[in-house]
Each structure stands twice: as C-alpha cells, then as structure tokens.
Length: 201
Image (cartoon, rainbow, N blue to C red; front, side, top):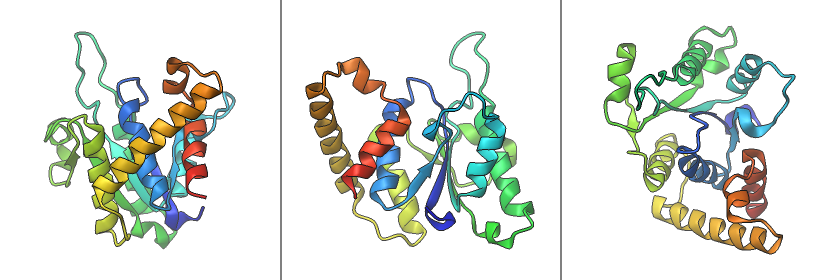
C-alpha cells in the first residue's frame, strides 16, 4: 500500500500483549489501512534496525505503545526499544529532507495513565491515550484516533463486535484444519494479518 495508507506499529511483542495486538491489527485492516510491523516478515539475515527505519519511512501514520515503560518485577529491565523507535519516527518527521514526512501522524498509547510522562519527561505535553491493558479499549483508542484524522469509521462497538466474530470464525476454521488452541493462539502475526485481509477483500 501507499505511504498514505500505511500505519507503523511499535509495540511490545510479549505474550501478555498479543491479546491487544490482534484487535489493534484488525481495527487497522478493517479500516482500509495496512499495518507495518517488524513481525510482518521474518528474515534472520535482515538487520532489525534497517527494517524499522524502512517501515517508519513507508508510513504516514504510526502507533507507539509504550506500555513497558516500567518494569514489573525485581531485576527486570525496562524495555527501551519502544521509546527508541518513537524517537526515530519523530526524527523522521522533523528532520527528513523530504517534506512529505512533516505530515506524519502519531498515536502514543500507554497501559497506565501518565506512566509515559513519568518515564519520558520530554513527552510531558504529549497527548498519550491509556488503554489500561484492555483489548476493547485499544480498539476504541485506535478507532477514535483514525476518526480524528479525518477517516470515516464505523463505531468502536461495531469494530469490536466484528473482531470477536472474526476470531470465532478463525478459531472454528483452524480447528477443522487440525489446529489446537495453542496453535491458534500462537499463529505468526504475518499469518494472522493475512487472515484478516482475506476477510476484507
């Protein structure tokens, strides 16, 4: 898809976040946009930073979820990947010689209200949206952000209901193909995105 319809996704890739990532991806694809995420392709020979920069430059819109701004357990390291990628994206908008990047739009998400401002004081005036770790809330925040940027959208409730129907249908289909529950829950993100896209062809 074109620059105008691409949305770069910068988020955690841990098991706790997958129940949020899946409806986030569904909201984007069902709205006629293309999510651009490092998990969209797997190549161990590809330098990850180069891939990130490519996806950032290919996308007018970006969603940055900084939910891991605070470690949750003793001796657990704070994840700096997400703030780093946000910085790259902001730099692309402000310093890229091609003026089209000045039109970039950002949605910054957090799990706990004001946690981003505490961890990154440079963003103290940023309008971060809080999803409280709730999958339905992330649909509301992404849907409303797209609507605020002039995109004609269905209601968040409609998108959420459509996602749940899609996931139930996917579960039934994959079960008939011999997939067990753990197989379905751990489908590669690229495969999951293809399944959503098939729904909206």
